[in-house]
Amino acid sequence: MQGQSERPKSDRTTVPTGLSTIRNNVRGLRGLRGRMVLYFSLSAFAAAVSLSIVTYASTRAYLLDQRSELATSQAINNAQLLRTLVGVNPQDAGDIVTNIRTESGGYAVLFLNDQDSFFAQEPLRFTQSNLPTDLLTQTLDGKSSRQRFEFNGEPYEALGISISAISGQYFEAFPLTDVERTLNTIRTTLIFGIILITVAGGIFGFSSSSSVLRPLRRVASVATDIASGGLDVRLEAERDPELSRLADSFNNMVDAVQTRIQRETRFASDVSHELRSPITALAASVEVMQARRDDLSDRNKQAFDIIASQVHRFDRTVLDLLELSRLDAGAGKTQEEIVNLADLVKRVAQRHGFADVPFATTLSNDDETVLDKRRIERIVLNLLENARDHAGGATAISVTGDEHELRIAVEDAGTGVAQSERERIFERFARGTASKNSTGSGLGLAIVQEHARALGGKAWVETSTSGGARFIVSIQRQRSSELTRPML
Image: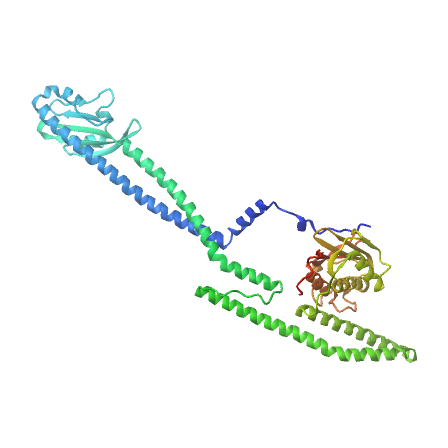
C-alpha cells in the first residue's frame, strides 16, 4: 500500500518569480491603479497634444509670415528696379529679367502688355506656365496677389505685382523649403514630446497610485488578518482627515464584530457548561439503569436503548461544543514535544481500539518534529471515529511528509464524499449525504479542521483508490528551535 498522497496539481504548480511578478503587475493594472495610470496618461496626452497643436500652429504662422514679409519686400524692390530699367530700355526686358537678383531657388517672370510677351528669368527651368492659374489671372487683371503652390515637389509662394508705369506685371516665386524643413523638425520634436509626456504621465500616475492606494492596502491587509482570526488587529491612526475618518469607522466596526463574536462564543461556552451537569446526572442514571436492563420488558428495553443512545449523543455534542469554545477563545496551553509523528499516530490508533486498521508511513524512525500531542490525538481519533460511524470503518492509516509539512491520511470503506460536499462537511453541524441518519454531533470534522489550522495546516477530503473517502490533514513541520506557536 502506498503511504503518500498528493494534493491537486494546482496546489503544486509554480511560476517563475519574474514572470509571476509581471503577471501580478498586469492584473494590478486592471483595477483602480490601472484606471489611475490610464487617467494620468490620457490627461498628459490630451494636454501635450493641445499644447503641441497651439505651439505648432503659432510657430508655423509666425515663420510663414516672416518668410512672406522678407520675400514680399524683396519682390517689391525687384519690381521697382524693373520699372526703372525696363522703362528706359523696354527692348532689353529679357536681359534685365534674366539678371534680376532673386533668392536661391527663386524665379522671376515679367509680362509686358505692349509686347504681349512673358520674359522668364530661367526659361529652361521656370516659365509663366509653372505659376498658379488664379495668380496669373488676378495679376494680369491689374490686382496684386499672392498664392502658395508646389513646383517640382517643393513648396513655393508666388507674388504677383502690377507695374502700371511700364504697363506690365511682375511675378516672383520664392521657395518655402527651409520653412517646411524647420516645421518638420518642430513637428517631429513635438510628437516625441507628446510620447514622452504621455509616458511620464503614466509613470507619475503609477507612482502616485502607490501613495494613494497605500491606505487601501493597509485596510486590505488588516481585513485579511481579521478574516484569519486576528480580531485584535486595528488600523493605525491617519493624519489625513478623510483617511482618519475611514480608519476610525473601520476600527469601530471591528470592535463591534469582536464584541459580538466574543459574546456569542461566551454564550455557547456558558450554555455548554450549564448543560454539562444535567447530562452527567443523566449519564449516571443511565448507567445505574443499565444494570437492571434485563428486568425490563422488550418494549421498555427499546425505550431505554433510545434514551441511552440519545444521552450519549447529547453528552458527546456538549463535549465537542466545549472543545470548540476553547478553540475559539484560545483557551488552554500548547504542550509541544519533540516526537515521531508516525509512532504517535500508530499508538493513538492502538490505544483507542483501532489497532487492526492497516498502517503505513514513509517517515523514518529518527524523523522527529515538534508537535502538540494532544491536538494530534484529537485529530486522529476524530477521523477514525468519523470513518467508523459514517463510512463502514477505517481501511487504512498513513503518515507521510517532506521537509516542509507532514500529512496524516485516513481512508474508509464508505461511498466517498460528493464533490459538492467536500468543503461543507468541515463546517460546524454539517453532515454529508451518507451520514444524515448517523448519531454523530456534526462537529467532529470541524474540530479536526480547527486543530489542523492551529498546527499551521488544513484538512480536506479526496477519493481513495478503493472508491471511499480519504481524509487528509496537513501539518506544518517544526524544528526543535520553533517551540513557540500561537494558539488559536
